[in-house]
Length: 197
Length: 211
Image (tube, helix red, strand yellow):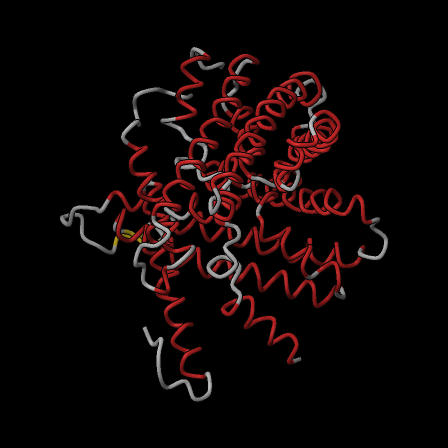
C-alpha cells in the first residue's frame, strides 16, 4: 500500500521530523569528522544532497522495472550499491569537466559518499515505505537537505565552542556526540507534526 | 601467536573501532535500545567483517587497484545478503526490528576500514582474525551501551524485568538522543582511563599538565 502523503509534506518531514541524521542516525561517520570545518561541511552537504536525490530516483526506477518484475529482491542491496557507486563515479567525472572549481571543493568527498550510510539508507527506506516516484524524489531531496542542514549546524556550533573548557577525555569526539545528542533532542520537538509512512 | 594476541588487544581496547577510531557509529546509535537486537546485530557484523576480510585478503593480489573499492563493497554486500536472509528465516522478529539497518551493515565503516587497512596487505587467516576481533570490539561497545539503555529506559535486560514497574522508566534512554549521551559517557570513561594509563607509564613525567 502506497502511503497517502503529499510530497511537499514529505519534503518538510524529511528535513525536520524525520531528519536522516538526527532521527535516523545515518551518515554519522563523515558527519562527525567533517563538521570540524564549516566550508568542507557545506561542500559535503551539497554533494550528499545531489547524490541522494539522483540515486533515490534511479533506485526507484530500478526497483519498479527490474527488481520487482524479475523477483530479484535478494540482490537488492548489491544493485542499489552499484547504482550509487556508478552515480558517484559519473558525477565526479561531470563535475571535473564542467567546473574544476567545484571539483576542487567537492572532489575528495565524492568517493567518501559511496559508503555513506545515509545514501543507501534513504534508498532502503524509500523501498520499505513503498513511496511513489514523486514521493521518492521529494524524500531523497528532503533527506539530503536535512543532512546538509544538520552538518552545517553542527559545524557552526563546533566553531563557536572551539575554545570552551571541555574535560580532556571528552575533547573532540565526546563533546561532539553530546552536542549532537542535544541537537537531536531539539529536533524531537518536531515529532508527531507530520507522518512519513 | 603473539601477533594474534596483539591484534586482539588492539581491536578490543587500544584502537577499538568505535570509541577510538569512531567508526560504525550509525548502527551503534540506531539499534542499541534493545539488548537482544543489539546482540544479534553485532554477531552479524562480526561475521561479515571476519568473512569479508578473509575473502578480500585471499583476493588481494588479483584485484586491480582501480576497482578496489567497488570489489570490496561487492564482497561485503554478498555476506550481508547471506546474513540478512538467515535472519529473515530464523529470527523474523529481530529482522523486522532491525529493518534496513541490516542492509546498512554494507556501509558500516568498520568493515570497509578493516578491509582497506588490513586485509589488503595481510594473509587470509590473520585477516580473518583481525576482522573477527574488530567485530568483537564493536560488539563490546554496543552491548554495554544497549545494556544501559534498555535497563534505564525499559527496566529490562533481554526482556527480563530488573527494575520494578513502580519505578518510572527513564524513557529518553530509548529515544535517539540518549544513544549519543550514553556513547559519549562511555568514551569519557574509557578515554579517561586510557589517558591516566599513558600518564602513569610515560617515564619520569612528574611536573605540569596533569590536568
